Length: 415
Length: 160
Image (cartoon, rainbow over all chains, first blue to last red; front, side, top):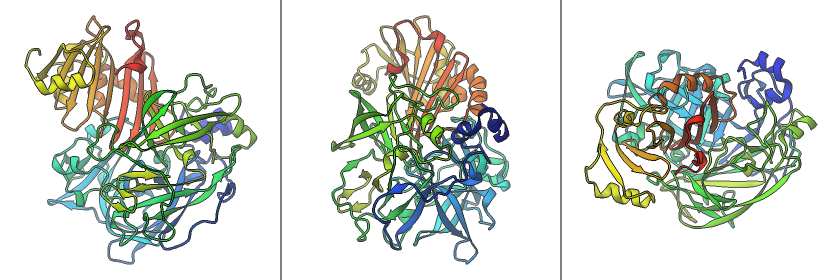
């Protein structure tokens, strides 16, 4: 399948465009404010608005959550507000696409060299320097936050081992990346952590004496790309991602909230939520940030991730959509399931979910991008990913590793 | 590559429910990867700066490399000695150019042409090669195999 938007539009029409995140100019132009139902949104200085919306270039990716941030040159009033920042609980720290930056952020230095990073995602890699920014999200501020500037023209040469680490697809433009930036608010304080502080890691941090001379380098924790929540003056132990429920038939978008802090304000109490520990930095099973999900009698490495657009699991009896949507399930009728999540330390929770027919939803209204029973077929056997559909109708809390809450010390998830 | 006793390795393999016929070797440069003779495993170990452990199963030989980065790479070879599947899990993705060997160019072309679905899942098919990538920051997993070379009776999905 081509990544070109014109080819996509000609070849496959609306269905194809809705699936390809890189499909600029394709998809719907719908409003992003209808479709959800639930209690009124929380208010307060610790709240930031989020939306499942069409995203940059009206790309209309499915179940993709965005927010807006303001970044400033540290200690100055030279600032820029940037929308369409994807909210990702599967990563840690702020990344901005240089393409959308109108202010000049100075590149962080380490031992007299410029500090850069190769960030690997399953669908590609992103390369660019680290810069300190003063971040405002909702009413919360993180001063001198180390963040990554992806695709910075000052450092256009990508080290070979960054390209060879996983997926060689370069994602250094908005169209390639699918967002103007990424706000990683999962349960760790840095993107890499002690592994990168203790020794140089390939395809991770680099120090560069020039734009073409970079070597893998160890980087102290304080200089690594940092989860901004940890730098807030208060409400700094985690976050609750709150989205209203969405009709099974889908919606053209939905709005919700990030409520920062856990048990720190009247609007972020865990109350009766079930708390499930997730793997710590040093855990190998479950892996860091993960828990287990037992589904159809099999145990899976599993994670709850706002940055995944569907519920990804393997069920060979469930019908896959015909081309071009083969990445998703298309059962003849909506199918209901239950699965049991088990935390890293034993607490468990049984969860019901349903999988519908993506093609039928898009046939009924091709502008629908908030689709609660979207099931993904690309799951690696032995894994179960609770993506954004899990968040509809829930408040999902993430406590950061080592941070204290009334329900104990992170890392954990609660819902 | 046989015979250096290492009780830690034996107990690790026991914990993984592998046969006790296991060996550890410390890596010296050589050459092997997916679709290539298992002798090339030593190169993978060298590239990944890890220890190589091997054990014989009923239908294949399993070799496991523990990279210093914390990533564990497992390579599965046929009785005839060719690597037919590779799996990995850990905080980072391994250097797939090394792991996939001569199949890397096909993989890279297919990956770059694949429709983007989301940031955390990808399946790439390039003729005989299938690569599944999954996971998120600090927790990546993956699997690559050559469909035509999987021994009869082996389910790639169920490889340990």
